Length: 151
Image 1 (cartoon, rainbow, N blue to C red):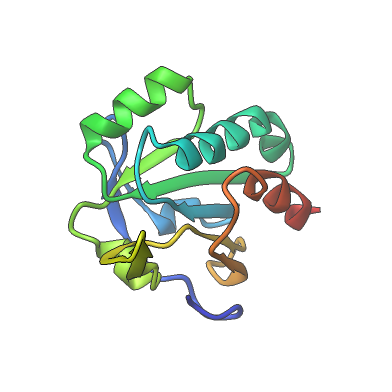
Image 2: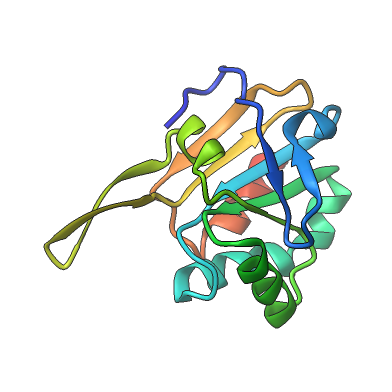
């Protein structure tokens, strides 16, 4: 996990509609950059829907929400449509941002070891500096925690 106070690494990734986004285009706004393992899984759906429910409050506070996983643009589009997600989902199949933000880790599941995305959320300030970093977050609690972090 990256340290608080460090410059957030730049990225260039397509969203669920195929449009490319960079971190630099969000200068002047707080960015909630959350990394999650997989579209349409129980925890990831809880987390995404939690952000969606609170989306108006995040907007009031001038914050942008960006969800990142290694799922395809098409998978993100289906996930967005199915749950009516009002925010941007970035596709990172090449692990560009996932590795830059140090969230690609060894995971153990039922004794089986594999590499995967560890659910991690970063709060990046208006100048592009990480001001909060949370790893191994609980999917259901994370949206409310990030809303409180903005207060």
